[in-house]
Length: 380
Image 1 (cartoon, rainbow, N blue to C red):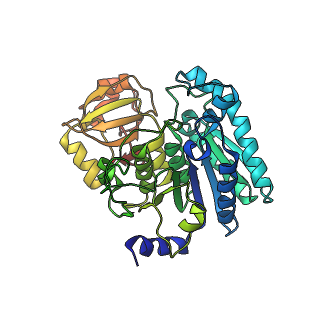
Image 2: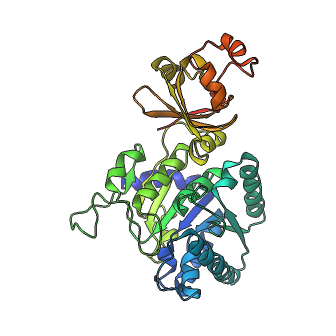
Image 3: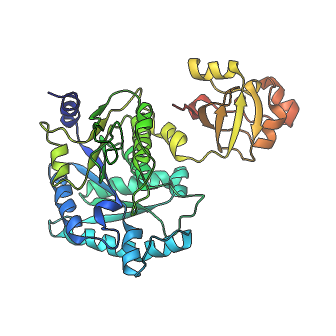
């Protein structure tokens, strides 16, 4: 038995909830959505749903669908052009999903998200409740980034990233990323005949990033590097990821078959981050930076302490109370992120002071900690 099969057998024993990300290249030939491809994938998805499993689909393809329906010759490059194509294409894409799921007696629900939706704690929790309610009713949520309103500042990046965030949001047991490649190779298989498929990544997924190129296909936006980065985020939440070739017939059924090795399985690493700390580390966009001394870094990294003003050496950026900031050591290496209890202007006045000196410097004191340990998370 291969090492992947040994780990997969344990995983399948406890498999209850799965997030499946479907790339644009699996749905489109570059000019239009291929209905036959969608129908085959839906049949495979329904086989998972019938096990029964809770199933959440994260589907690309709205822009590609819109390109075809608008008669465009190339993929739009500007944000307004992409928004327009997505507005046209999302309707067609969801109608196609709805039709093919309905033929198998299943309902789908559309979930459109932006970075702002997940960065706001209240909206993040509302999205979770909505998806949980759909799953309880045995409805299949089909999620996508809301490209019709997203701009560069709030874009999630690509749906690989979105799938990892949703997997964390719903406490999935497995994230499956389907693309048009078999998985992660030691070298680019299109250029090197001796390239070898890596079936299992047991240690930190960041250690194999050098194997992944960052080029995307003509239809999609995420290359292998974005898939590995998504796997890293899922891994920190205790969720394994399997990257596989979605052009294979019935690939999802093969993935949940205990006797079949498929693609690249990336195991979860370390202690599982709480959902809130994962949200701080991977969903929020840092609004500023704090440079801390070695004593503060050691206290945070090794002893799980809060960040106090005494350890702050420099404040960069203009941010308010509650903002997410990066914590850098003296060498400029990011090692943590957290939510600040003081605004940037306040921190500039109290940096380097003992907590007892905060009130004298500001005229008031909210708390002793710049970042409380409950709002701090270490970054791999």
